[in-house]
Length: 324
Image (cartoon, rainbow, N blue to C red):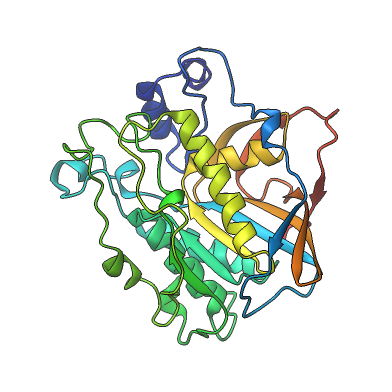
């Protein structure tokens, strides 16, 4: 039954697949022509760039910049279907408790691998809540392997990292990702940024950061435009903070697109809740400027929650990380 549904490209089928497996995002190409999977164009290949050195309160010491692109945790409407019937914002579901726990534990895993200096997050509530849990795990004064959520963190070190909301990381604003009957009638996805920032641990929000994307996309954003947006925002944020490690909390399409763009000749089939792709590139300083190398994909031997197939004859730069 599941295999049969994967062969078709429609929103109805995607919703059915989600019901079959609630903890994952089935990544299916959503263009009109059936049978095609997402393969990025050669125009998305990385080039060495030279950027002006920005402010970096906690620069890297390992000569590499690491960028994690992560999906949010378990959303309530995939577990409580009747939730949307009474919700004031049915297009903006929160996390269930298991989603909070998954996010926190993922933050602990990332903390054990790489120090994160900045977190950028989609304005959708499920991403804000995910990022809040991750930030608590990353910034806890004492690492407790038995902690399950931010409620188990007695104290936060606010100097470890900073957080900012970024519109460019938002969900695809179209009926492929959001059911038309649940979307705002006027197409206005309103977010009260100050209220959302208040959900993060006190002292963690960087109010001096300007968003790369100043406005939300228009409703019925084309899928290919959305994919281009995800790739552009990853590059833009990485280039803006080249000497810092970043965590970008976004949506399933953002993670799948990032993975298949930077790890070419790859087809992504599934992105779990809190799955992430890790990128790294060499960074060097010369004459007051930062010279960035090519991106590499860091594979975690299946631990990161992305299921894909890859042309093994490809010469993409990929390295492996032993699971922690």
